[in-house]
Image 1 (cartoon, rainbow, N blue to C red):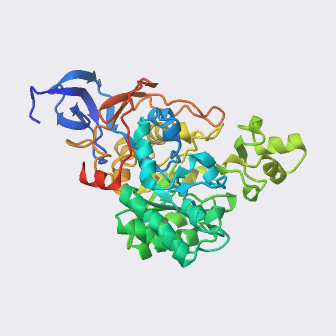
Image 2 (cartoon, helix red, strand yellow):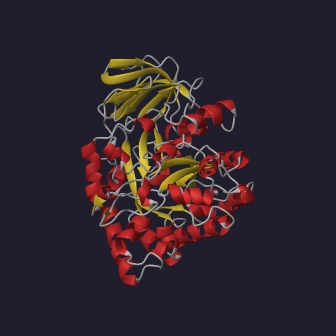
Image 3 (cartoon, helix red, strand yellow):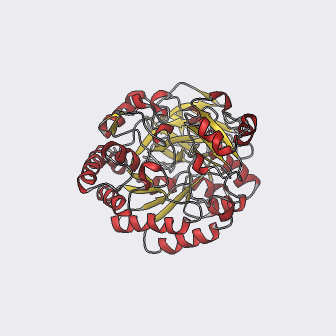
Amino acid sequence: MSAGDTTPYDLVIADAQVFDGSGGPAYRADVAIDSERIAAVGPPHTLRGRAVEDAQGLALAPGFIDVHTHDDRAVLDDPGVFNKLSQGVTTVIAGNCGISLAPWRADRDPPAPLSLIGRRQDFRFERFADYLDAVDAARPAVNVAAMVGHSTLRIAEVTDLERGADEAEIERMRAHLREAMRAGAIGFSSGLFYKPSQAAPNSEVIALAAESGAHGGVYASHIRNEYDGVLDALDEAIDAGVAARTPVILSHHKCAGPANWGRTVETLARIDERRRRHWVGLDAYPYTAGSTVLDPDYVDGVIRIMVSWSQPHPEHAGRDLSDIAADWNVDQKEAARRLHPAGAVYFQMREDDVRRVLSHDRTMIGSDGLPHDAHPHPRLWGAFPRVLGHYCRDEGLFHLAEAIRRMTSLSADTFGLKRRGRIAVGLAADLVLFDPATIADRASFAEPKQAAAGIRAVWVAGACALRDAQATGERRGRALRREEERHGH
């Protein structure tokens, strides 16, 4: 748009320091919004708007894309999704780790890890199309793109989870996946680490990943082993992508447990070697602790474990397992059995490994937060500002434009979201305005439900959804269906 253009736009964000998502240097500009799209980008103070936001040189970036969430139910039950909106996230990718809310109409209580995202009555969508329609009806504050979970498919169709699926079961799972991909799912995910899918051979995964790939989707893997067997598990996941002719995304890459600290040197080298011949991406969260179900099998008596929720003992949410065990005069495994079903935060990584993974040029940022935990991991509220404040500004791990690329264009390109992740004319007006000098995570392990500092405003589909850490009540998010995103409808 030429300088001095007199067209009045719906909104002009004036004199912003624009980080366009590409990883290139920032530039000062006006950004104009009309309806739900970016209508113009021009030199500072040259565009006219019916409304003007004086950015005063603050950083303007594409809305952040949280590539690893378990928000499948949260966007329906709590469509304000304040924990994500308040950290600048405008799009979430659900259905990770083999866990998705659809397609399954539950005839029994969901086993772990499906219990992390819902109860029996929540698994009510026989078709993925029905789930996406429910997202649209809920009008969430953020956009939702979703994958289909392998464990969900297995629980729906495999009669004995202690074995691999037979041919008929695989065909029924493929039929579900085909319906989902046609409805707009963006891919297929697995969680071979978890009990419902542990018995599945890679041939079963390949058959399903190939269905995703045939429709232009991805394969995201919570690999079988992030501990001693991490290299073999990485190869297994990438082998599946190769055989299925599908891009592979390695979820929350880590080397877990003290015996494996430092091994990201090996794992990242293996990933680099494999990606020379096949498309491989990865995501990570910026913390040394993970969070999932509390399982006595994961309790080693060495690492710190904090209880995030417990069905029989909700009063112990937020307490360390070792303290609970001491109170009960039992060992930690027995305490975990008594707390079950429950969730936990596991302090299982080392800082140098976290930094190494975050620094890798293919690493996207994903929170992996669990929104239904009583005392959640702070990543649910703080992952993105922690990268921008702590790791980027304070620690100098990468420059700001590169940090933003890992939250925007890299994520959008990886998952095929062609209308997101960049500031450019014609793309969706999903934007975040923040102060690079003050942006910071406030969520802590002791007090995890805390909004970020330093974010001035967030726009979703051109509407201001958040201003100065307060939701405005505007909810313009929707289900992002794969084909619509690819063709810009």
